[in-house]
Length: 65
Image (cartoon, rainbow, N blue to C red; front, side):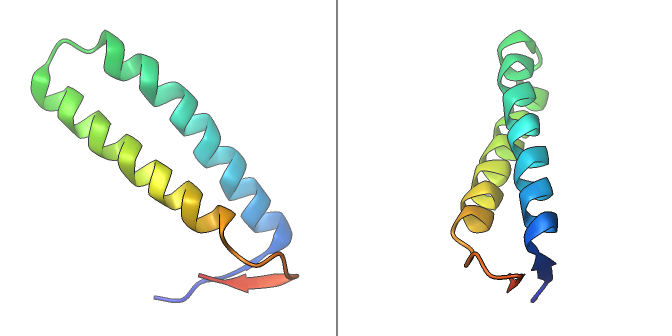
């Protein structure tokens, strides 16, 4: 799938992904349920992949994912 983003949209997504990553770590640490902890770890990995994808995008006015 290809998604076109403006520089402002890309920056906002990076900020939101960063905030989500900041929040998921402590949530994993405080979770006692192993199944939920595994879901959170998977979510963290997906967020890291998304952050890397957005960070590696060209710095053009419009960028396509």
